Amino acid sequence: MSQAEIGLITQGTIFSCAHASRYLSRAVHGLAITARCDMAQKKYGLLNYVPVVKLEDWLRIDGLEILIADESRDLKGRVESALRDSGLATSLTVAIPLRKIASIHFSPEGGDRKSRERAEKFSGLIDLIEQFEASIAAGSDEALGWFKRYRTKKVAELIRKLSRHDVTGFYFLERLAELDPPSGYVCLLREVTTIPQAIAEELANGLTKAAWKERYERGGTGCLKFDADDFGMPISQIASPTIEHLMQCFSNLFGRIGLPDPLEDEISLIITASTQLEEAH
Image (cartoon, rainbow, N blue to C red):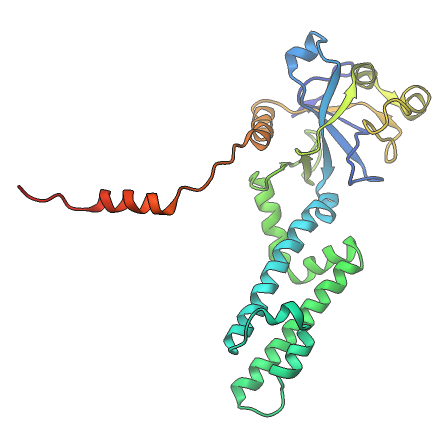
């Protein structure tokens, strides 16, 4: 990564005052992805870019959704396991609240020691679920705080997966400038945004919030945002091979081809034929 050249935006240039639809009022940068040759020869009518957000902001929005989905699956699995261990149908949860199930089938009074332990464990699980759901209802800050307090390993593992580029639709950068300390940024590969060429060329030389409002805000709505910064300009340049790897991830995201699963009956026939011993002559 190197310092950007003022007056030039090309593929891999990171600039300020970008826009991301779910990150309003937060600082968002843009990463230009339009082909270098098109930009060098000015053969582009629109500059394409993907938003880049701070890791801490990503964890409160996209990352939080991933964490919530994962935790919800885990809690559901624990509830179903507890029901099966007690000889109950997992479908009970469809129509009956967990507290009601607990009062009927997991009474802490009476029964043997194992039954009482099972009831206590199920009650604790319900407490955890209610606490988890309450944190979600209280907003993203409270929900992320819940994960940091009770699921630190899950947060850490998500960041590690992100850093290995194993979270589909996102690309991790340690920093946005060479001399900055590593704090983490995330490219939102699914949210491609465009800037008209005239705005992009002015942005390359520095675009003030006042100039944006005067000349472009109405016609360029949605391509830039000056909520968190008053001056849009190139910040840095992602070097090779990182930019090529990022573009490869971007291409793979939109170039995936879905195929149906192989037919099990046909595969079974092939396996049977391939594993039979040949008869001796």
